[in-house]
Amino acid sequence: MDNSIHPMSLGDIFDRIFKLFTQTFVRNLIIAVIVFLPAGIMLTFALDWFFSTIAQIAAQPGMINERWAASMMAIFSAIGISSITMILVMISYLAGILGITIVGCNQMSGQTITWQEALRATFSVRLLRVFGQQFLQYLAISAIILVPYIFLIIAIASESSSLSLISGLLLLAAAITAAYFVVQWILVLPVIAWEDATVMQSFKRSATLVRDFWWRTLGIYLLINIIAQFAISIVTTPLSIFAFWGFFSRFFGSMSSFSEGQLEPEMQLEILQSLGSGIGILIALSTVLSLLIIPLIATVMYFDLRARKDELNRPEDIPIQPEQA
Image 1 (cartoon, rainbow, N blue to C red):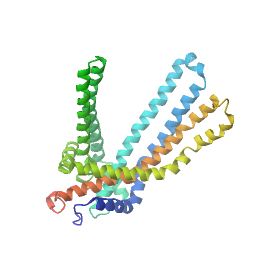
Image 2: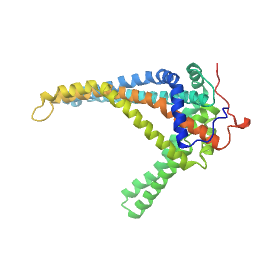
Image 3: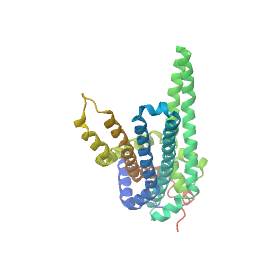
Image 4: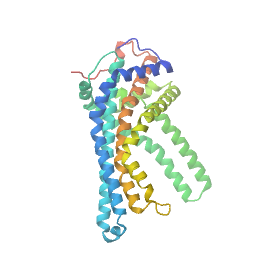
């Protein structure tokens, strides 16, 4: 393990993230493109199909009444394909995060791993563990929020002010509890990627690292993520002009066809139909950019907290490293 890793200040963490970003940029970009871009392209076509289907049905108002079954089938098919594609996008996104985290952890430890080796380590049991962990975390957080929310709905329906107040307080407490656990589990992906932890071990290990540094972890993670998202938005804003070129060209081209201050229905449908591909392209581009930055934040914070707990200089605490060719 690289003994130069020591407890870091906020400035040190920023510096480490920037260095890690530049040192791993090419490899991480290759991983992001290979793992996520196919799903992003599929999403673009799925959204384009969805908006086109809605526009075609809206262009024929009588179609819903005359061919109700066919119209509903087309709508549900478009929704189903879009939903399946979104699931594939989420799976690809998690795989990309895992691969880039593996590269980052190796770089932080003073080792070099190729993108091919990172992909081999990604598409292994580690990826299944990431899926399992994310699924269990989603269920846990949802349950914490959902139970008091159901009580609040029942209280409102029963028109009981006292019960509504109690349910509202319970919902607030649940939100705070959920936020607490989200921060506790913020390092599960580096733990799985670098220590080869199981699903349940990753929950416990992340909570152990964050313990005694909860507020610090929350503050630093939020601050760096806000800055990262702002930087991403600077890049994606001009790219959005390209992504929505079809929408903008149709919209501004229709300005001369205003009828009594309103767009003609045909023009409205053309504009609606052009939205799908633009949204898909923008999601794909912004996600690839997020993959290049967001996993590195958790990676650096993971090593910082390990250093703060004096784990990096003890041989017995050195984690199992990803298999390398």
